[in-house]
Image 1 (cartoon, rainbow, N blue to C red):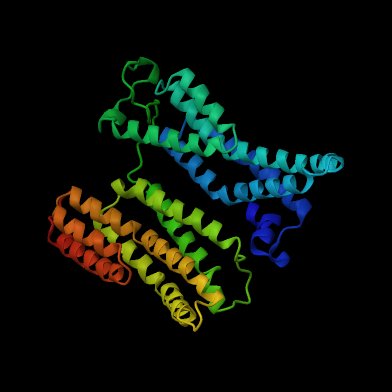
Image 2 (image 1 turned 180 degrees about the horizontal axis):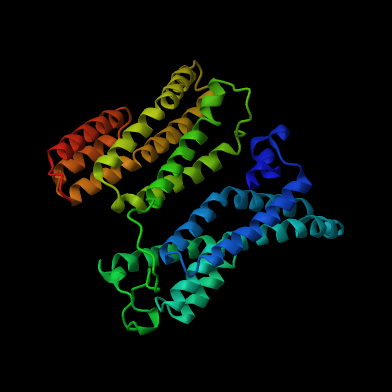
Length: 379
């Protein structure tokens, strides 16, 4: 809902994209923010501690473009008014409401983190002093994202250290030995039988981040330069920033979720992402061919030739990001001894070379598919 108001119009440079009037947008923002906080703290006694920290981190990443734009706005306004002392009251009047709204939004995005900290402290997974430090970090701008990442990684590491039969115990948390770092999950008494299956949220979030990365690639930059679209697209000055955020989210989520996913599944999604980017890479190849003659122009390179290095560098970085699922599949297959370390090195090398990366993705998926079919069906 936040991106359906004024921020979306600013990012996309299109006033018609603001589908919600400003006053109604502000009212809905306050209402949904309060509902989000109430739901987050209501899940303290029922939801897994690790899941609370995970969703807090996802929420932080989703709002990262908004906070980056806020920093740019503060820097721009500050630079405009800092040299004129008589204009400082006007700058203060303009920035104070914006700062209050940004900070309130940051606190709302930290609600799941606060809930995870409270639950971890009550279960004696972390000490009260550590809980205070994490709470302090979640309440400070910029440091809140670092605190969210550290909290999730800590709970993920402790969750991985839990014995498989720890969740089958039916003892209240106060009878557990304090010296044991975990049982931190599902240690409350309940009469309901555990669900037969759970939604693989790390996998879902990883695929959602990859989908946003693909969508952002086609929403601005080289593709819209070659094929102008009548629909609202990201401005050329905003597109690299959003692309960088989506790329980082895709790589991080893929790395975090790889231990819960099968090598064959990772290879499949890696190949699918490669194929979805094929029109994008073909377009950038046409742009490179178009800019090539300017490098060899008589009398030295023409001004258009200076666009070529950023295009090549950006294109290669995007290609490496599209190989993140493939790298994760290679690492998983090597750790499970499905392929030898030497074969893993060859596939990694192939995933890092343009054009060869698509061939390597196809070969990797076919290999893991064949090995998966030959493996016994018993788990």
